[in-house]
Image 1: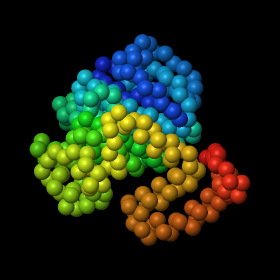
Image 2: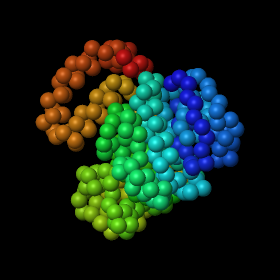
Image 3: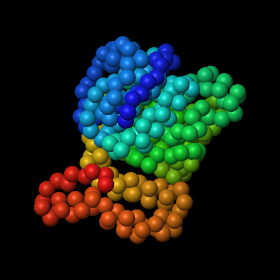
Length: 310
């Protein structure tokens, strides 16, 4: 990934690291690692890089952990955090060693949504949503969009843009007793992070309208019933299960995964005819790759494939 250098901030953070495994770290230990020397830089393609608080934890593998970290404010997103998350998604896209993103949160809650006072001030002055224009938009509503899959694991409370971040991802899991709410209509605004589009498409019209027009709170089991999440697990198992899913995706042929995701998104965004038109050309391109050769060889030799993304 190269070297990253970024100043520490007291306004919360998002931080990221790659991992094929996971070491449980207590919150105080995790925070001390980040605050010990915010100016430290280390060159490695397998380390935490960047974001509002910069430090490093060396890990190996193809999964990029993106950890929301403003627990003292229940992970409410201010402008700094929105920029940080966008930069984290930039890293997901830029690092060829990384194949999957895994998003989760430090603290008691995934997120209470926007820090409205902080973000409203930016909106009034800048007349745009606070994301760097040249970076990936994690909500996929404008600008650059991601091409790699993301798994999101939520717990505690997941409000407004937290739900919309889930809807912009590929697989979502929730801890038992997680509380969800899309409350913008109770604040005089409306869901502007893609919720008005993705709620009906992914959860059904009636289910979507019930929750985005009322702001009503619901729990994990209801989220599972309507398709907002794909699994509900114990809180103690949440991160491990997220890692399992992310690593299972990462173990597949990367180019095949990206092509599958692109075709699926093309169908949703541009319609089935556009996606269908590209099916055979994409297949022919994949058949010329080393990973396709490895996939066939591993099948014939009855062994697990080792894909290189080539």
